[in-house]
Image (cartoon, rainbow, N blue to C red):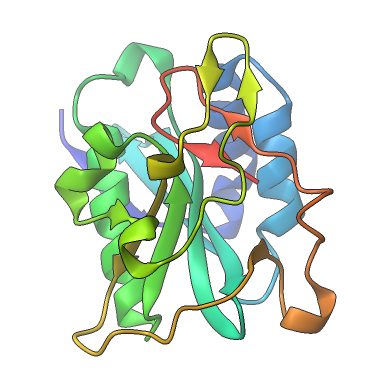
Length: 191
């Protein structure tokens, strides 16, 4: 079967939330998507196989100091379709869409072993510290190198300052209140 990746449409929303719920066995990921999906700068991609949504990735506005960037996450694939490259296709298509929208960088919290294949590098290489380093759930603890960045422009973005989700610098959440959630396979975090 062929999997097509495209922008999420209004009629996809309920199925996309169900993919998130089934992939993580939690209502927390659908809640995160619901909280950011209609914010300025947010968009999502879906993977469709045989007219069924089998994967979803959310992109939302974030900030590094005064510079607007896009955060990737959460990302989910139905349990019976995992390991088939669908998540990779979602990341590639989502980064291409982000660049086409004129965005300069994508950030995420996730596994360097997984995301480096898509051009993500540890943000520390650009002098950016992981605001969630040391946070943990169970056996998983966020490491400094889990905060990753992919620049989408040949001209480096002016990236310096506090990292925060949100619409505008004036309305950002305080980092003390943001709570990342580790994905079961440590391939993503959402905040």
